[in-house]
Amino acid sequence: MSKRDDILSATLDLIDEEGLQSVTIAKIMKRANVGSGTLFNYFSNKEELVNEVYKAARQHMGEALLRNYNPGLSLYERFKCLQLNRLHFGLSSPKEFLFIDSYSYSPYISADLRKMEDASREIMLSLIEEGQTQGIFKEMDTHLSHQIIHGIMVSIVKGFIIQKYPLDGLQVQQTLEACWKAIRV
Image 1 (tube, helix red, strand yellow):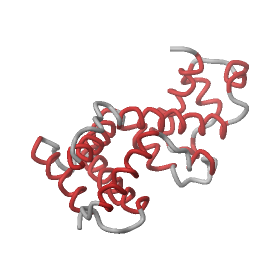
Image 2 (cartoon, rainbow, N blue to C red):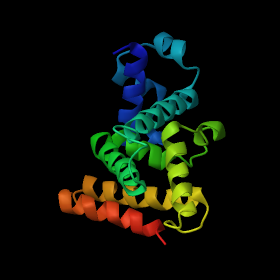
Image 3 (cartoon, rainbow, N blue to C red):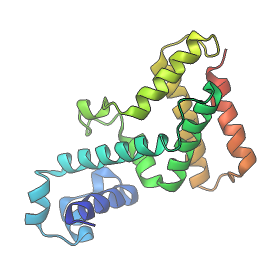
Image 4 (cartoon, one colour):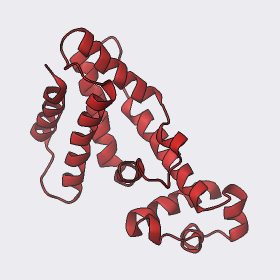
């Protein structure tokens, strides 16, 4: 891992442990085991660094969502693949998942970055639109439909992380069905 990656990783870890407001440049340098010259060689300030952590996390999540995605499958199977991948990302990368959820609407994250488009988001919105055209999904703003689905998954992941309930095969299937039914006609 490069020094830049060490800095990004240390920042994410500290935000996860202490919250964004408590994280200082000094703490980041200590955790990443780098000096100020190294840190400021890559990032001009804490805001730029946090935005880069956010961008990297969003890109990682976008890649994870498209894992094994097959556009030739049925609408339901494609939907299920994307949501199962979202769930798996939340469970396998909880720090990134929760960071994205917590800071997507934060003024600390630049407006352009919050609106950052990626292939997975476009595919999900297109899938919702396709379902609406076929009369399978409710006619509503596609972004709103996407947010409803995402909200369900975030809640499930958070509950699992705090050990509120297990997530075995049955609960995962029930979660996927709940997401599907939330926007289905």
